[in-house]
Length: 251
Ligand SMILES: [Zn+2]
Image (cartoon, rainbow, N blue to C red):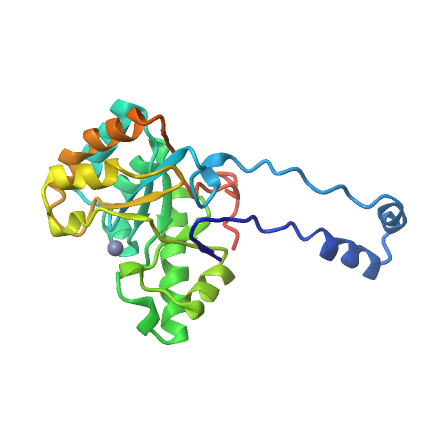
């Protein structure tokens, strides 16, 4: 699924489970038929949703983890008690797994942004699958959490890439507010653009891929501006299907 202004949850496969019970002639099948299971209540925490609520803004940082800029961003977020979302590159995670672990330790959401930052729409099916699955597995290896979202490099996606991601349990996450911080327009411009985000919107910034000192400098003002308008700042895409730390990896 693609996230624009709406989101939805994947239904639990209760029907398939019932059919399986019937096939094996389990004695519980009669009880199951007499009293079909009630729908499970939605207990998904807000941080796991792939879009912010109407009274909230999501700050997202792409292309990290970066040895120089990610930690300063984490420190500012901590100072304000803000949780954000980091779309990380598999190749950078492999170089700096300790920084990814620190992002996780401080309570932020983490999701893959491919391994090599190439355009997914220009890949054949095999390479596309390898980039999506590989980045997801790299993140999972460090965090022991199964990612539930991904962001395509350059925002380049189509029905084929979205379907491939969806097949791996990954929602495709874009944005509504583009700071263009990678163009280094100045901290003031970045702060004005991101700080003006409306409720329900996702803001695109970068902690990696180049000199992000302007993004770091802009961040306090961004947070203060968003909050001054009565909006909350929330993470999105937090994993809700994490395996126990000591348990086996599941795919
Ligand atoms: Zn990127």
